[in-house]
Amino acid sequence: MKMLGGFAFCLLLLLSCLTEVVKSRSLNLNTCTVNVHTQELRTYYTAIRTDLIAEDSEIGVKLLDNSMIKKVQEGQTCCFMRLLLRFYIERVFSNYASAEPQHQRCTSALANAFVSIRRDIHQCHCHCDENTQRVVDSIHTEFIKLDIKKAALKAVGELDTLLDWMETVNQANTQA
Image 1 (cartoon, helix red, strand yellow):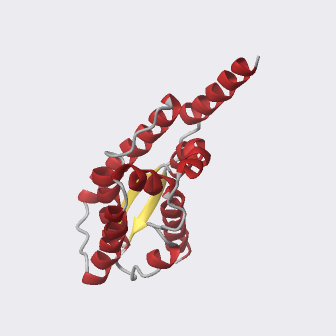
Image 2 (cartoon, rainbow, N blue to C red):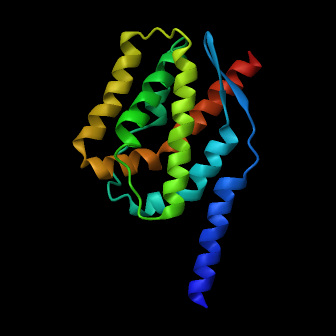
């Protein structure tokens, strides 16, 4: 009976990943506007978040920090987003692996969404200043201090910080 209950729970998680209504939202990144399905990203992340946090053994390390993100100067959101997407696509998702099939599906969906957003941002001409590059370099520095698998797990587990930032940027641009 317990096995059946566990299977039903996994099936519900999988269905939540695959059946969420996709809401497109334009994300304004200075001179660049891209479509981001924030609700879809949240759904995929929420489906795996609890397990990611439970598996994270590097409690004292933070890769993405709100105070660090606040250092991104006005006019640099496009650049910052482009550099973070590159980091996640090339370093994080390529090194993250889960034994759970529903986690694999949700992580794959997140990675594919990031690739799509990155492709759209490449159409823009984001110019990066030195300070923005330093902020992203500090993320890379913390990442490479850890074992690659632990670092990737931590970075995926901290996606809520990036998702929150994307929503904050969009709200700020909508109100302006």
